[in-house]
Image (tube, one colour):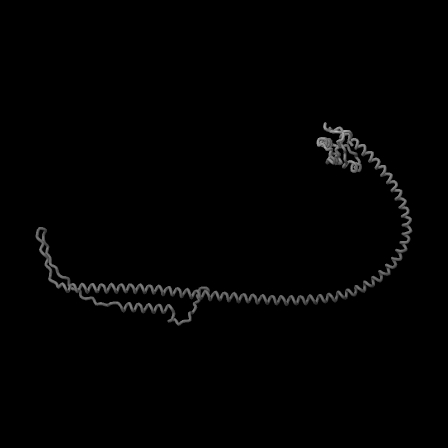
Length: 344
């Protein structure tokens, strides 16, 4: 279907051989046979009904017997028989006519259905033809698109080839120029190297001369520096010895203060004996506050150990020297033994 037009597919048969024409012809033949079987009878003259004479009587008068004209009984029976046969023939004809009409209507319906089927077949054929045409158009469009794509690829390949050839030409030209530049630079480099070699030789000789002078001066300086270093080491050793002596004296002073404070804070349990000794490791902060305490060696008595730990933890601040070096060396971390006879 294109727009408002409708495609009709030819069946390939002459018009008079089409199913529709054959159906119409068959219907005409059936109708002709039905009409030929119809019984055409000429109606006979109806016999005159017998005349009946009567009279009107009053209520009290006796009713006279009706007087009828004499008739022939066999003739009337024959007439009734003929009427009955005629009626039956008419009913039979009507029945046949109704059957023929029903067959005609059935044939008309069949012909209509056949026409509809034929129309549907034609529409389906037209639809198939349109589908095939659409597929053909799509195939043609696809082939055209492929051809255009191949052409674009070919043009792209040619362009890429031209670009590569141009790039190769430029690269070759650049290579030639680079080679010329390299040879030029090589010549300049060799000239510079020769100049540099001569200059280096001159400088080397100058350095050797200065080096000899410097070596002589260095020997003199080294002897002087060695003398000064020995003097400096002697002074530093003396100062270190004095410093060590001062730090040791300072540490002993504050260790005695710490033992005194701990002795005042320690309350050994009643079960303590002179053989019990608990060794604790104490870690202090630069402020003198307790950072950590560990039981290094137990006395064997839990109460004794806990009393020593409690004494260490009970001091809010430990007496420490102001000198940071002395603190770091002797009081950052140290051990102390708790014994009923001594505290060291």
